[in-house]
Length: 476
Image (tube, rainbow, N blue to C red; front, side, top):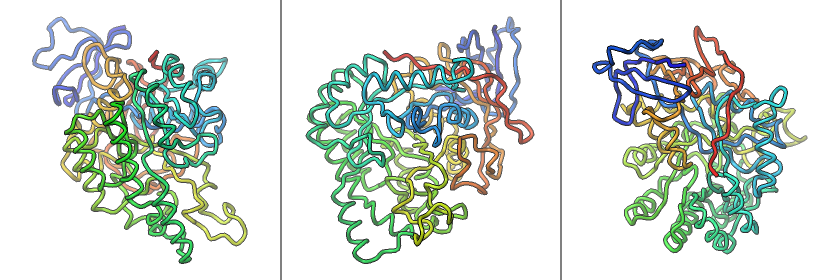
């Protein structure tokens, strides 16, 4: 079936256009500026008026946690939340699931859960997806088979990741893994923090009886130096081996000169940051009415001046893209209520709470709220959340922009709407968020996956009008 969408604000690679987007069999076949719309155009056309039409968002940093930890999240709830947030593709991380995705057998278990976990063996995913593989200690021989089996790239931690089954990788094992990764041509995504400065800071805080219910204590335990030392080491290895390096969830602005210099040198390095680093600030976390530990992430959220430098780095291209690092957990793991802690334990201890912020339902509005404060455009935001992530994951020939030949993965977005975030707007498994009660700007009205509406919001009512039809992007 051929149909079309018209908007006075279509966000394309060529700018914002008053245009009609023609869709056939889930593919964009034409983008006609209104002044050049053919007289023969007779396809059914939905007029979106002043609602902006954006390419569907792509999140390259999602923890879905299935199989093995569906009490934390799962494909069904994560992809519903994503559709409601304007995402049409998620790239799932290889940890927090059981087993971790560090070999082909584990990858196939995850594939089966996504593709057949719905009713009668159907997909349980509302939107499309792909997978990262894990590069851990002593799995070098599994990396090239994982690439052949279709992962989009590899993820490593230089520090304990919070789950015992996914081991941190030290420099020696990383050096052994890199030749295998180079042969695949795929990117290596790295959690860039190193232990020494963290261990020293934590030991000092404990020796001085620091108050772990205060955010300043937690922030002091994750010093900028942990990121700086890791990034210096990674850039040195990238310079030597010329592998595709991607630094995930950059928090410290102090690393920006290093990264900018590496890019000027021509090193194949890309960088992401996250909505929470671009919105929240260290100065306000202790007063967060939803519970301060809901703001715990690793690396840590830093101060307001640091936040402004991250925004400047996005604008000048030092930081390439924005990813959510959606990392959900059951509420008790945030240790905010008396029934969540052990006898005698203080409520809200940052050293004991899980570090992770669920973001799939909220990221776009959180980001647009900040963009409007800085007079940034939808085209800029779309680049950081759609086009650049598509390039990183090797999907740019199919998704990430509104142009002929691409999948009709689209969102109708009201940039002028404001709303106060409620639990009803959160479609992931556990309805917790540091943003609850905030008035945010911008609202997703419809999300289309390959031309089919998978989410609608009208009159403050959220609906998922079609059964799950998400599928895996084939990368092998």
